[in-house]
Image 1 (cartoon, helix red, strand yellow):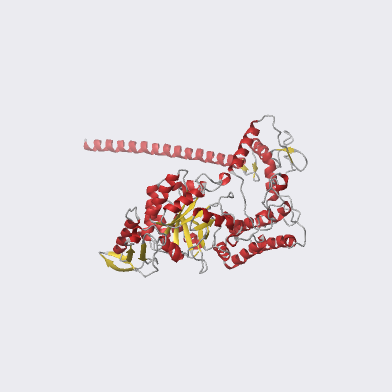
Image 2: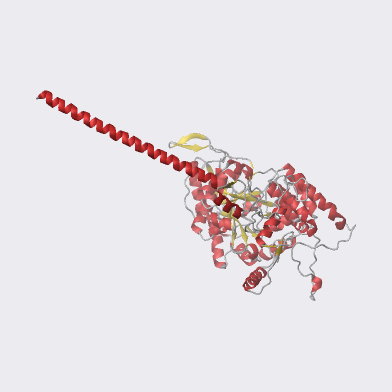
Length: 623
């Protein structure tokens, strides 16, 4: 088995806006834990809304048969998922207009009649499984594709996000759209908006990434079974398309079985099992365990797909033979070789140019295109001689620029591929593994030339753990050799400053020009030293400093000499002047208040004296 993290659960992409039925117009969702009760509740809820439904339960021997030729339940649903159109009222409540749609099938009937019994499946991949990539994969053997993972909350609230996400075409079927989230109502609303554009709705229960932990979705919901049961049953009862799930396993085999059975009883019509736990990710990915997949396939009565360890067509056939699954899903293997299901390793420029042709017809974000090309051309871009092309691709922002880079690689390596020149190998930017010739043991592993599409093989988790141990031991050794970094003049500098220098040197300006381009704006220079002669400061001088100093020295001078520096954004003099003006204004205001108070006191005394005089006159008159 190869080592691969064949899981992808994270995205943000988008197609045509489809305002669907609002959540407020739906009936309340009854709780249900079995397929039969879910179907019954669904029928009752639909009757309350004025919709027609037919629930067909298997009779006689078929009801108890474990054969996979028929599904446990067949639900025919007639939903109107267009914008809510108010018609007649029942009991004072408006109901939705309905239109007849294709029957809602379940289990193996859905897998065979709607999906066409697919064995080769492309996984949902964040920022990767967009329409153009799905069409490329379908051209070369993929029988079922998933959309990227969409966030249900963003999908329901943001029309632009929804419009961009729902990009599809007639050739893009069968298609399953995947959502993540932890709110049954929000997931249902997202499903209603998307169900007209796909053949099923998938719930992401397998994403192990940190962002899924922060957002509380994906594999971090697998311990909340009551919530998951409510989510699956809610979507199963109210959507006009089936609901599927993509999950990861537990370390405990028994818990994994109970987990899968719970999802099946809640209404899941197809289960994709990734044979890795939630903690197997990144450098600790390791190998997926197919024993779990095989056991779940034997126990469940719904179609089961396997995900993990798929790097070639041989892996696909071996997985089906060992586990008996209905189909095999791949993510990373497909990204590095979208021709995987055809069993060939094409030249990387052939794949890249075909993908760019599709992108011109079905546009995709530049970041998606760049990401795909870096994976397709990974082994070529890993050669040191192609470093400039790698940097150029990183800053390209058009399909024409990408195509020009691919053409350069084709012109460079096609003579080797056709045998007109002899290939002797090149040094790569990564550490080289020892070749088979360096060992005494015979081997049958053949190395493909770097211009052919081939899988990326991660190092086993044990290697990563050993590296961590070695790094910790080296860091604790007081006698270790300290790495020395030098600038262009040979002066020793810190590692932090060296990294900054390298980053600035390779960072292009906004025009997208390379550092060697004469039209490129001058970058920051580190050979201009601070002009503070009193301290002999060796820090680099700020290019925009008014005093030709580094930031530290400039702050000190501005503080003591009452100055400003717009280059370092130090406005000490301006702030002091402002403080003085405010202080003077406060003093002036206080003086005015005191004067007004004194005047008011004087006026009060005059009024009192006048009142006393009037009283005295009145007393004299009366007497």
